[in-house]
Image 1 (cartoon, helix red, strand yellow):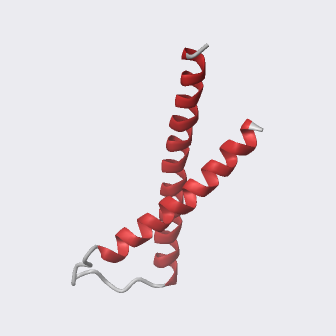
Image 2: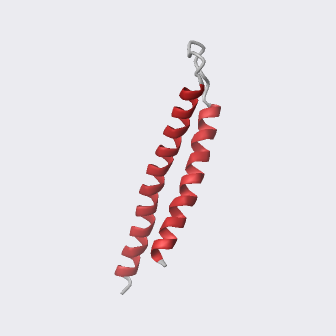
Length: 76
């Protein structure tokens, strides 16, 4: 059950973090000298966003589940 919960938590956190990163990219002003990117450039930026989101979600998942484990250990 714990493995399923951690995978579900990580998947949900990955989607939420990716949405927040996309929102942040849209709000950030783009420099005027930035060249127009083609299809490959957009896909690379999108992949980078999802990899970053997965890394952040992995750290958050480990922190939350590790904290819950320590709370369980300390209350015994």
